[in-house]
Image (cartoon, rainbow, N blue to C red; front, side, top):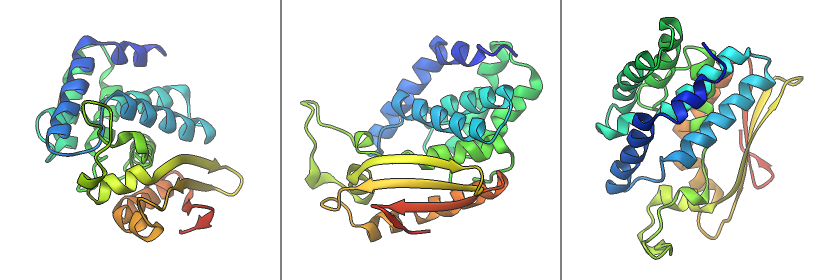
Length: 226
């Protein structure tokens, strides 16, 4: 597989159309942003995790491709979107000429990324899980057509995302630790509400870190939570 295959996937008209349409669907049912900003951030964080841990360029490329495609199943339905997205990705990647073994790696990671079925069965799947669940930020909250924010309409996940001023994933190789560092604005969400809203995700991140030989830690507003 060419090292430029990720760019081939990212710029494919079918992929671009599916990501945009899938985000329209999740917006219609009241979810936060799942478009190009999300998949781009997930791809970048997954790459950073695996590169810091010394994984091959090939594995990193597969993780970036899985990250870019991981939410296209929302086009079909939010329910079971990991599985439908994996099958959609399979067809796209075969059309683009990806080797079967690489298709299998990407499909596996996509199919295991959602909380309801997620398991960090491979390092690529583990990196995708961590990067996806760590994407908590203010800009994921939907804006009105005039660009304003309707705070009165916030649900808990809107409040939690809107409170996240800064989020960073840090891998400490010597200590074999991965830290999710978050700065929140407590005017919109308390530390306890933030923790409660993402407890399941953080438990999943812990299992993903174990797959990578790391221990998972979370720090909110300079206070270690896990």
